[in-house]
Image 1 (tube, helix red, strand yellow):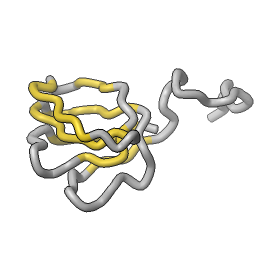
Image 2 (spheres, helix red, strand yellow; image 1 turned 60 degrees about the vertical axis):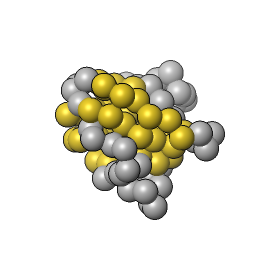
Image 3 (cartoon, rainbow, N blue to C red; image 1 turned 180 degrees about the vertical axis):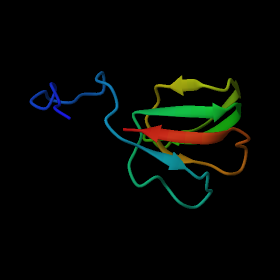
Image 4 (cartoon, one colour; image 1 turned 90 degrees about the vertical axis):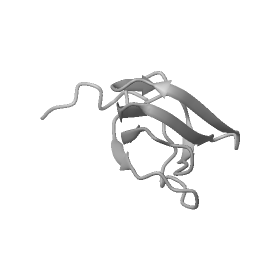
Length: 87
C-alpha cells in the first residue's frame, strides 16, 4: 500500500507508526520508549516516565489513549490490562 507520508519527517506530534503489546514488569523496561499508551481494559497504571519519574494513574478508563513517554510499565500497582505502547 502506498504511504503518502513516506517523505515526511516523523515527530512527537505525528501519529504513531508502530506499536507493541506491553506485559507489565517490575524489572524489564520497554524495548522502545512509547509516544503514547493505549489501555484496553481500565484500571490503575503504574509507569516510569522516560525522565525516570515513577507515576501512578488511578481510574484509567478502558479504551484510553495516554499521550505519555513511558520507558516501563510496572507490574506492581498496575491493574489495567490489554496495554499497548505506541511509538
